[in-house]
Amino acid sequence: MIFDSCMLTFEAANAGVGFAVANRAYIAPDILAGRLVAPFDVFHPNRNGWHLTQPVGRQTSRNAALFATWIADQAEQSEAGLSSLYKRSGAARN
Image 1: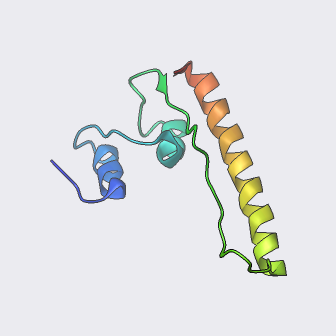
Image 2: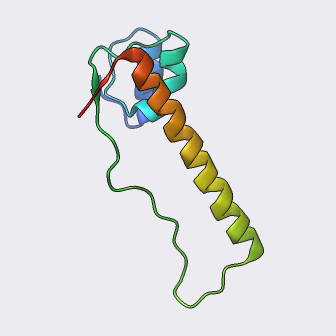
């Protein structure tokens, strides 16, 4: 089967239809809950990172600065959680 959305693919795997190739960040809760299993001990980190951008010459508003701080904290927490998941599952870091 082919799905036009990664979320539909994950739901199909959760329903027992088959397997899915997925970014573990999206399915970490399903792995932790035991609904899905990562059959291969492979981890491919995002070496390019994420970027928050704004137009050149535009002053950063207070709300934008607060959002930038919040999203950076969320990314750090997510990375820490995924690292913990990989350590518990014994996944190899490639």
